[in-house]
Image (cartoon, rainbow, N blue to C red; front, side, top):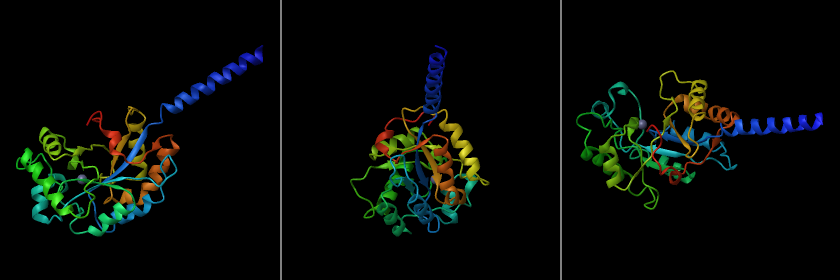
Length: 253
Ligand SMILES: [Zn+2]
């Protein structure tokens, strides 16, 4: 009798552990903003080819690209005031990287033409957002499959009625996400893992968590494998980037 009770206790303990494990099994998807930039986007593509999603296949990510090169004057006009120095990509200047992203099976989204901060007084209306979206489209014409999903992510994840309206009018799905923290000046893979683990452990599991990385950031270029391995080791599940699964507005975004 004693042994039976002990067996029952073991079964209950095992079920409890399984349930505790499943409570941490949030899914995450990978997205990369601010390319395409040589020496950055190509590095990330190379690293991604060696990362497997939960189904065992090389993971598919989303790349939210910029349209045009930004010179010093444009940076002051468009970028947020706290990052005027930052180097970013351009699909007009680097179409070969756009082709490489598509050839490796990843998806591409519109991240505006100039990395516009839609809180500047001269950029905060629907017309300005519309202009940033449509200029990007002209620059991307001929590079993208017209039947591909139309995805838009505003720079700095600025979510305003003007952004939502302009994107909806142009037929775009807005894809927000959760910052990985890789844009912080002293970001390390360890700090990213700790930050993201904290978010995923509290995540609403009805929808995958879209993580926002930057292919332009050294911590991401050098640490992506380590970051994903650490998250998977903690029980979180890497899913392919699939915008059809995101047609719900993310909590807190
Ligand atoms: Zn960005």
